[in-house]
Picture 1 (tube, protein in one colour):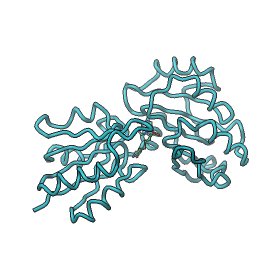
Picture 2 (cartoon, helix red, strand yellow):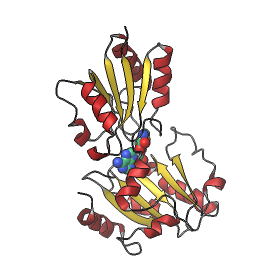
Picture 3 (cartoon, protein in one colour):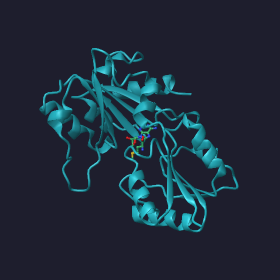
Picture 4 (cartoon, rainbow, N blue to C red):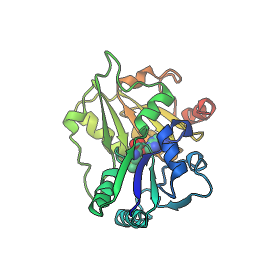
Length: 261
Ligand SMILES: C[S@@+](CC[C@H](N)C(=O)[O-])C[C@H]1O[C@@H](n2cnc3c(N)ncnc32)[C@H](O)[C@@H]1O
């Protein structure tokens, strides 16, 4: 009889953001298959007798191709094992969880989802920046800033350049200058505040407050360690800690002092 695969969200990094169900499944599993974004603090909670398989992908370099990951999951479950497939954040938010589920379903393997806190919500909790706020943002959109090699960023800029909606950009660090340019070209004010947050909710967290016409240059100065998330919109003006846009080096220094943990 074949086993089962649990597609589990590990949350943004802080192990206390793991759900009780995720923890139970991790403890009961025969094997944990995990991604690069799963924090070391969370991996430390996997019992030592549970086998671990690292299928982590470095940015722009798939350490293990997605097809191979699918095959690994099918193979383990076909051998009757209970598999905990552990992903950063939520498995169904830019997590390719649905692709893995489709491959498993095709092989006749049972799948269960365990949701996780997505990076946007982790970042909001870490900084106190609300994703919506009466009078500032009546909605929020999550988009990817990643583009396939040599392909243009394929986003609906006109609808994204909306002052009343918070924009959260995942996987955007390489293209943030272009994203900011496109948003301003489509009417978002150049002084719209932007928060870049790296490794949100972990002891390695870094924050950078900027604005649309400067974020590209600020990020290019370096210093932010992946993964990085951008919150763009008027809600960022509610961030309490930093006054108006210090130079980036000063911000990063201040962040280290004021950072998490
Ligand atoms: C492939 S996506 C995975 C998203 C994940 N499934 C989620 O729900 O958060 C990877 C991107 O998520 C964002 N991300 C994930 N964890 C993060 C964290 N702790 N801090 C900042 N950004 C994070 C970054 O934008 C990163 O490039």
